[in-house]
Image (cartoon, rainbow, N blue to C red):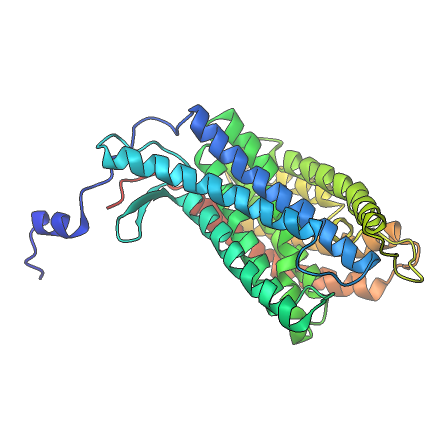
Length: 382
């Protein structure tokens, strides 16, 4: 049995962080910090969609291009906003004032030098890592020159860091879900990550999976994030609102990406690829067009859980399987409807639908665990 006294333990760990009582902070700083972080993730998503379209319609690029500028600007915006919120929290803690409830539970970092709200710590870490991996990408371009693929080591590292920042933005808004603007932020932040997450899986293509790795990512992360967002909102219509927001993001990028790539190519005097055919824009083309169907299924299942008293953890697993099958089965149909060069492949439909069952089950499990972590009460952290 340890003989260490309570005062000795407190001296070793440092004084408690006194968290302000009541609900989450509703100050101007809290709102501004959350919305600037998600603005940065949106800018990053636009830059990535533009960059992928540039590769497909124009060709290789260098490190210094306008799409890359948007990518780095977005991570910089989120990173600096997160740093500002960390400094606000640290200043309150050092002044002996109650730490405001900003973006999640406050935690000590760098040996107690800073007190960081958990959501902003994650988002800021993603932003910092993106800039660090950007140096790796610059070195990669310096050695190998042009590149025209997504799965280089530097690109995969960049995608992982962007994903980290987007996860942090959801954590921030989840901590403020007791306010209307926090719930609205969840509706905005979740579709951004749904749109981006499959790109991170591109590095798995080197393992030669039975289905394109981005499709696997879509079938896993689409249902999982839809379930997490609906559970965080905890209101009828939450899943549908997220699906509608996803549709708006898809429609905006569907128009913007090819337009920006072609205008920029003309501005810098580069021709489009020879033999370029009409096909869906690259990134928005893989976003789940039928997510609204999956959202309706989630609404029905969650309604059954509320009205019939079914166990929520089981219904979340069922929701994961159902949405995984829906997203998987409808994706080949989406490709057929949007690409004149594509024909309906029933073999592919069967394959992706079958894969959607285990991936959907995993999505439901992970969605439930993530929701439990995001809705855990804020406690004093030493």
